[in-house]
Image 1 (cartoon, rainbow, N blue to C red):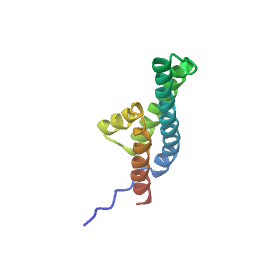
Image 2 (spheres, one colour):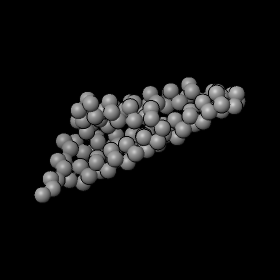
Image 3 (cartoon, rainbow, N blue to C red):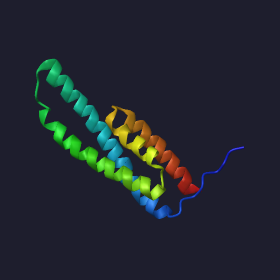
Length: 112
C-alpha cells in the first residue's frame, strides 16, 4: 500500500519558491562544471583564461543557498534535508540530480 503525500499548508508559496530553486540549481550546476574546467586549465595547463570565474560562481552559489532556504522553509523541510540540498551544490553534477529529485517530490505534494 502506498501512502499519498500530504499537501502543503500554503501550496502557492511553495510553488513560487520552486521555480527559482530549479533555475539556480541548474545555474550552479553549470557554474560548478565551469569551475572544475577552470581548475583543470589552471593547474593542468597553466592557462588562466577562466581565472575570473571563481568569484561569480561563489556569488551564484549564495543565491542558490537563499533559494534553497526559501523553498525549504516554504515546504517545511527539516534542517538536515535543507542542508543536504544546499550541499548538493558543491559536488559536480549532483545539483542536477538533486534538483530533479526535489522538483519531483515537491510537484507530487503540490498535486496532492
